[in-house]
Structures are given as C-alpha cells and as structure tokens.
Length: 424
Image (cartoon, rainbow, N blue to C red):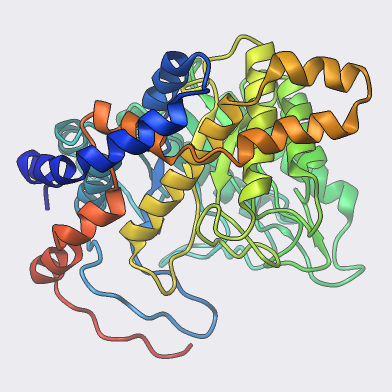
C-alpha cells in the first residue's frame, strides 16, 4: 500500500491550527530553535525487516493480519512508515530471513519509496533448513573448526548481499555461550570468536563497518561469549578501526548505567550505533520509551554531548535502528510510536542548557545540574517533532493518520487475515 500525499495533507490541514498554537507556545523560550528543527528534520531511524510482522514468545504467536509475506512487502511497509513520519528512510535486513533474490529490483523498489538499506544482519543463532552443521553449541566460538568455518562463510555471504544493496555495515550478534559451569573454556571460546571475526573482518569492503553486539544472557544463561560492552569493545579494538560496539538498550542487566557506557564508547570512538527498545525486566523488546523514557533522554543527553565534543554529524555518524517485538500491537503502529519516542528524547537532549550545565558540573552544584537536565526533559517537545515531520512532508500525528487512513484494514484486504497461532 502507498500513502496518498493529498489524503495525508488533508488530515494535517484539519490539525494545523491547533498544532501552530502549541508550537508557538512551546517555542517562546527556546534559543536556537532553527538549529533544533534542522537537526530533527535530518534525523532518521532505520526499521528492521523482522519487526514488521507480529512477534511472539516461546508459548505462542498471535497474528494480527495483513503481515508482509515477502521482502518486497516488508519494504512497502517501511515505505508507509516513512511516508507518515519522514524519519524512517532505511531498512535493515536479516539474512537468511530476507535474501534479496533480485537486488536490482529490490533497490529500485526501495528508491521509489525514498528508502535505502541500513546494516545487514547475519544469523548464526538458529539452524536453517538443509544446514550441514548445527549451532546448538555455538557458532563463531564453537569447539569444532568446521562449525566455525560454516558460520564465517555465512557472514561473508551476508556481506556480499549487502554490497549488492549498497549497505555499508555488517551487524553481528552471537547467541554463543554456555548454560552450565564447566561446559565451556572461556578463554578458548573468546579466542575462537576473535579469530573467526578476524576472518570476517578481512572480507569487509574498505568503506564498510562491523558492528559487534553484546548480550548478558539468553539463550545461554551461565555465560555469553560476548556478554557485555567491555567484551565487545575488546574484540572491536583488536579487530581494527572498522569494528565498533553496537548497543541494544535491552541487552543489559537491571540497573546498568547505559548512558555511562554510551559516553565512554563515544569517547573512544567505538560506538557503532543503537538497537532501540525498552524493558521492564530484561530483553523485553518493548516499544521505545514505554517503560523508562527518562533513561532514554539521559542516553540522548550523553549522545548529543559526546557527538558534539567529537564534531560528529548527529544524523549519519552513528547507526540508529529499532529492534523490538510487537506481540500484542499492530507492528506499524508500534514502530511509529517508537520513532516518535526516539525523536522526542533527541529533541529534549538538544534543549539541555549546556552553557549552564558545564559550570554547574565544574562547581559541584548537584542541585542545579539536576534542575537543568529536568527542565529540558519536562519540556513538551512534541510540537517540535510534529513540525519537523510537517516540514519534511510527513504527518503531524503519524499514528492518528495511520488509523484515519485505515492502513491495516487495507493491508488485510491485500494480504489476508492469518489464523491465530497456537502455543508452541
């Protein structure tokens, strides 16, 4: 389905007077508003191909209908999201879930929708049909060199697909680890992983990056071979300048200070980017900003400060992507909500009064520093986000327009209403 611009404009027009009133009110005390708006307009968050269908758990999956049945339909759904928010101009593919059989036509479809291809993701955390060797006991860290070689070759194959689509990064997440003490030699597992990654790294084109993701547990619960940001950073440092650490907000133990991790990785020039989501307990993959929006703001505060300190381009020098599972929501609505939450946190961080915060920190004025941060966080920046979307040709309220245009109903008519999945 394609969003017809005139219908979107008609809905925007009906909301325009109320929007202008709110924008004028909140803009009154904001310095450098034009700069804030330019940065918001330039900011884009990639959509993962695997998030466009209904998610699930170990116990069941409940389809909502109208889900994409092919890579082409996944790209079309991202086109819908981008048409509405004008902040989702790229899609990230997971191989072998989304093998582009005809790269030329796939690229042409993406271009028609104003999209390009973000990082490509490899998959060695599950066995595929007709796969010769199993990843039951790991992939890049496996004790069997033949299994490691198979996983290496898969990652190199993913790079080749990415080159066809003009992607510029390989994202690697491993489920490798152990469930019981004594099952694994930690040093050998880490060394095997490093040597495997070195072979993959050598296959990267000169203008590519390798993003190394980490996770403290699941599916292995005693140890994970790349279990935290330090282990990812160590691997990236040993590999070279093209390797960096990818931060997934859900891949931390409770209470982890993610904003501090982000700050240090930025300082070392080793922050690749983000997989955005939210969590209550662990890797819950919930809608971004739905549980702890203040933490999201604090992370963006460190991002803005760190990127500005290094003279980085906010929009392009770091990879921004959503990684969530939509078990009970319409996936497109959830992704629209997530993009809005990210842009709200980013806009709030842009409003932090740095000229006042720096001396407050230097003078150990804890109270004033807290007040400065919370002043920015408590500012209702939604009119700024809406205005950025409007200026780019998007919707003032993307979810509202999505519903008014009955997009999901149209998708169900086109693709069918799937039956409810039973428990596994």
